[in-house]
Length: 286
Image (cartoon, one colour):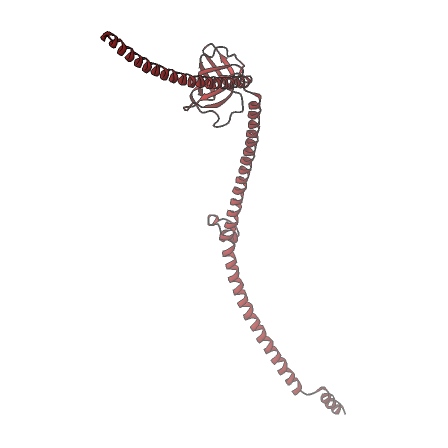
């Protein structure tokens, strides 16, 4: 064989080997691509399913939000509220608020939460400013003076209005109880004052009242019952001693009287008897 044929034969062999190698590489690449394509297709299908699920959840949340917002009516998302001396002043994008309208004001907290400031009745209204007063019985501590970033609403759902009404009734009942308790405390204070006066009067009766010294009053009102009782007890003791002496003297007098009577009786017996006197008189007449 000519050398050129040999060269061509080797070129053919080398080309075949290269083709086999490249075919194997292409087949491996194709298999890898197909595997990746299948994975991507499975991931795409899974993502589509997740998208459908999330879309349904989003629609449900939107419906729930729309249903929830039905009771809230119109609102102004951001305004500045200033509370001074029980009056609310609003400034900001609040165009549309009217005089006499009832508004519900919610203040934003530092952590993003909100706090219900209360129900207000609009007294003044302009494009960028409004003034309102509390539309409930204002109590101590209900309104804290300050400046707030607020959301303003023209209505709140009925269940919240009912709850606010119940809370207001409970507060009115509590106020009534507090008022009655304060009246009762005042009455008890008066009774305590009167009792203290009575106790002081009784103590002055018992212990005496030196401030009455020199007045034309019985000694018992000045010295007191204790001192008067002590004086009376001493007077009684003196009287008892005197009574004892008198009883002893009376007893002695009775004994002396009895002895005198006895002596008189004996002397009487020693005197001449009436019969002997009469006989003596008769003999003298004869």
